[in-house]
Image (cartoon, rainbow, N blue to C red; front, side, top):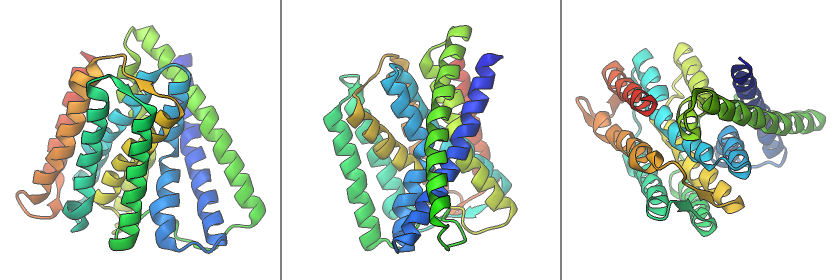
Length: 312
């Protein structure tokens, strides 16, 4: 029971912390007169990836590298196999041209790069983290220079900067909530793994990864209910790119991440690559540039199979 309380409390704090940090980051950016396109592609993207980043960094520093890796790999699988599946089951979505020009190729390249770095030596080293983060920087510069239409869609509607004291307050509350939430989540996840006699990896790719994907899922479902046009496959693909290049890149720069559970290399990363690759043909079949409930059923069945095989 205590494990569940820690996990639930940790996830709640992570969601609140990410929300507060996002409000503060956008407020400071607007106060500094940074263009909205740059806020959307950098500030918002980093702020919404904050829960995954803090959990992975904290887990790696606390000596639970499989939790750090499982969190990111599982989150990437959940973003496409669960979050995207639920979205398209609720409402069909049109896919933008940027999907096959930049979004999907970049996600596959980042995924393949990560797999190449860890598969043979079972270690994500510091210089590899630097390469991953540098690649993210180059990608963002490219988007800002040549693909200005590809703005992150979850920029808050009100573009009036908050009073300075509120910005500072939200920044402080967000940082404290993220750190405290990550500590509670990691402690609860590790205790749950010991209680059920499963590996940290199992808890990381299931409970923790789904938990850190809750903000994306909640925002997307609300957008579907409100019939907003802001939902796009590109947002979730962008989240996956950030998870790999920013979250794992920064974590590896702070401390190298060894792979202890070989199932991560023999199974999980191939599920991540497979579901990521599958999105491409699904987008074009049977009707080009559209995803609907049939695609959602396929994705959620695949995600269910992944979780079932991971737990058995």
